[in-house]
Length: 233
Length: 233
DNA sequence: AAAATAATCGAGCGCTCGTTCGATTTTTGG
DNA sequence: CCAAAAATCGAACGAGCGCTCGATTATTTT
Image 1 (cartoon, each protein chain N blue to C red):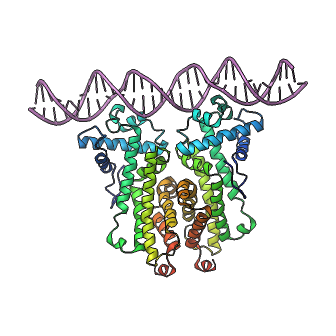
Image 2 (cartoon, rainbow over the protein chains, first blue to last red):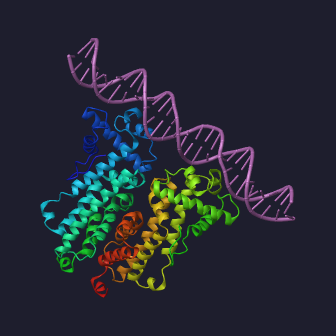
Image 3 (cartoon, rainbow over the protein chains, first blue to last red):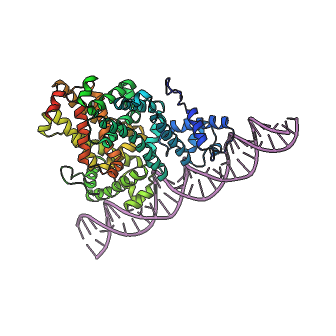
């Protein structure tokens, strides 16, 4: 419900819904922004909860109406079809992750090793702050219309490209010892995703987010850093 | 449709369905084995295809009847509910992966490093031979009744435990330099799963299974082997 | 405070879903 | 080759689906 403190404190459902409203102003029939954002937040909050439990497909609009407190009729003032609701959430996840990863702080951008560690840390912490959103995008995207599917695939490819670019730079600067940056980037991705895809498992084991980030960073760094670099660490 | 050559040649739909029949003899009302296995194969083949495209939930029994060539009424001679069909496939995947991973060849079992590489190689090749089955289990298990869900979680935990055991042995024999074998095992798992979960991506990029196995093995080995061991490679 | 506009509501529409069942066809065995 | 047994079939059922729409309530404007 409420986000964590720190740099990801602003990723509340309501903040994200304000952005959804902007992007879908033409299809959302409710005119007053403050009304629309508040109700959208109720709807999105409920649909994320229900979908994470039983899947979006299995979540009926009657379930959603009851869980959100918004009537069936009113729901259709906020989207014109169930698929549009899906696309709203998918797009928000995609835009947010693109935006966050594209803006590293200066000290991270200056050095490939620091940049890579920053990407890993930031990606995992972002998915933690928006956990239900990412689980939704990951689990649902595969089964839906071509449009939504392509969207998810493109978004994932974009994230991977960010990692591949840093890896390439690290190779050029002779810091990383890898032969195929694209394949390495592809293998880093599931390590980041496992934190939210199998969140229940890690919660049960008591693995903290810090421990998880450290483990992934360590695994990746140890595997790809040139030996001379590793001695420094 | 047909399996690959080599040690995984026998994982055909029909062979697996013969095992399903054994396990579900009491609920399958068709009496002659040769009839039951043949029809079961048609049904399972169709349900795997349809589910991988659109999801099990979105696959109706009318779709399934048409795609398999078995009528709606006859389907219910092979399972007593749609959920039982789900469980049949889930259980078969779980049993098979448990069985295969528990029986390493002698030369692999003797050495932790070889054993780990064998596990990685075998797991990826098994999921390749039974790709649709694993995609089905991975994508569908989350959304279904407690029983099915627990089954999938337990199966995943069992696989991870196999890896953790080998890692612990490697640490004891001072071959691996890791501090938390359970967490390392947890991180290896998504690397193995990515091959079938995002198979389309790797196919599009032209990544071969050999290249993928080599990349994962290399990543894991480089990250966890003691430095003295790495020089040998 | 009345009129105009905005937002909400839920019963009802056509349709598809999982499941059942009695009739029909196919296979088996003497 | 025919009766008994096994297997197959698809129409029919009630429930629940996404979605619509005219009536109602809440808010804004004058």
